[in-house]
Amino acid sequence: MNPTHCEIKFLNHEQFLRFVEKFGNEKNEIDFKYFGLKDEDLLEGQFDDGAKIFIDIQNDAIRFVTKEPPYEFNFRFQHFGYDISFSCRSDNGEGVKGYIEKKLYYVTHLFYSEEEFEKLVEYKESGEYKWNQQVRRQTVQNAKPKVTIRNLDGRYGIISVVSSHHLQINELEMREMYDFSLSAKKKRGQGMELTVTVPKITTTLPIPTEKVIAHYTDIKRAIKDGWAIDIYDCEILNNLEKKNENTVQLLGI
Image (cartoon, rainbow, N blue to C red; front, side):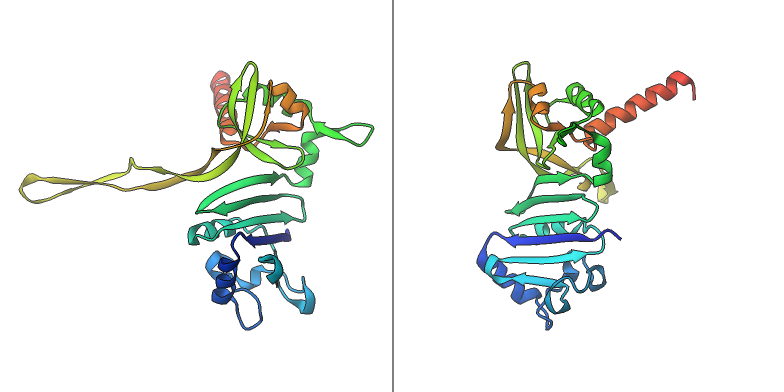
């Protein structure tokens, strides 16, 4: 079990009231089954009177604690078109913060688990910490546009510009990418063929927005300010896979 403390805050008061009216139940709680959460997925006794969910009417917010991180939960809100800010933080330290607006999904903060974070940083005698040498080296080697980057304080962004005298970090949107290459041919009368191209969701990728988070004269200054490449960025993982494949070929395995 990895208890995860969640909060969703509506960006529009009227939308919040309509949501509570539509999905509220007789226990004065919210039925999240249409958002991928069953009642047994929630931890009991987290709020007054043993309630599983707290509805904060004054702040247009809803708070609850799940037994495990609800990975698909926020995407359901995106699908239904609700404008919200969200925060999910597990007891082991991992988590995510962001917002959904006009069916677009933005991530502003991303946190590693405490165990994983400990392996990625080195501490000074003063108690302060910085990314370890391996992470810093990897950041210098792989800094390029469309690679995600994160700060020690949890801020999350994507590199949009890299040059010898300029590095720019932008806010990012998580966007579903489609592959239209899947097609099917069906014969019709008189030798005619009908070709149907079927869209297929392949993956969700980070896309830079126009909002600039930070900019520096070079990558080393960004690292000094707490930024480093996200070790789970798909570009970084692909590079590691290629290196491993090359190593296997060299060894003749």
